[in-house]
Amino acid sequence: MISLIIPCYNEEESIPYFIKEMNKVMDKMNEKFELIFVNDGSKDRTLELLKDISKNDKRVKYISFSRNFGKEAAMLAGLEACRGDYIAIMDADLQDPPEYLIEMYKGIVEEGYDCVGLRRTSRKGEPVIRSFFARCYYKLINKISDVKVVDGARDFRLMTRQMVDSILRLHENNRYSKGIFSWVGYNVKYLEYKNVERVAGTTKWSFFKLFKYSIDSIVGFSTFPLVISAIIGILLMFISFVMFIVLLFGKSSLFGIITLMLFLSGMNMLFIGIVGIYISKMHIELHNRPKYIVKEHNIK
Image (cartoon, rainbow, N blue to C red; front, side, top):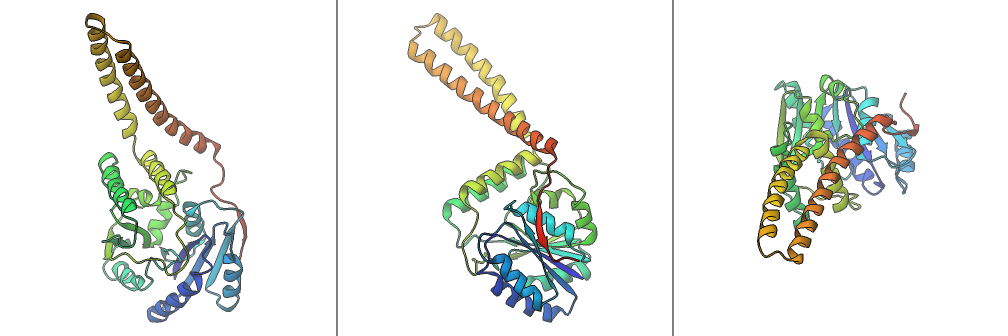
């Protein structure tokens, strides 16, 4: 059986299109399917729509959270609930074209891969600024982290049960699935495709949310910011000593002293902030709160 996990947040406009396209793919593949929609605290009619669809199609399951816990929590809930031998994660807005599931399935069953994912070769339709920062992010994290994240890789991928079981052994609250997928290893193949825009609705990812998500991923998979802050701290101590000598024996000025103090204070606050982010993540992990709360579901 193939399990599909579809996180949903205010996707009432997209779901009918998604179901229509998935039915075409499921008819072609002629395999047993279950579609697990995870309603992540939607404010629209997403849940009501899923309930109606599930009455007529027993393959459609839903999990509904008590509030919005985020896409990472929704993906985790689906992974924990699914029963399939092969498991895929995909978006409801059709930016993850369902027809690629056929080739993904062949990659695992016939070619022996443990995971087949989708990788965008273009970012057509995205704002230029967002695309620029996305490329910078992938270059940065791949330089400072031992875990390699493929530029343009989507969450959309088909995995074996063994790989999913390995992913579920990682219990951290600060989850970054692309990093987790890479960390567990296994043989992975990527299919390339050009970016596809949403079929309906609007994106839920603002620039600020993406920026925060990128910071979480860096903190979760690299200690490099702590190392670089220590190195720069040593360099600043040396520079401040040199400046002290210059100001002591040269023609010192109040402006120069104030500038130096402000610079060093600013760098000090920056490094305290970096350490604080790591400590805050430790604080969250120590709480060990549930990653999501299910209000209702129809999974048996």
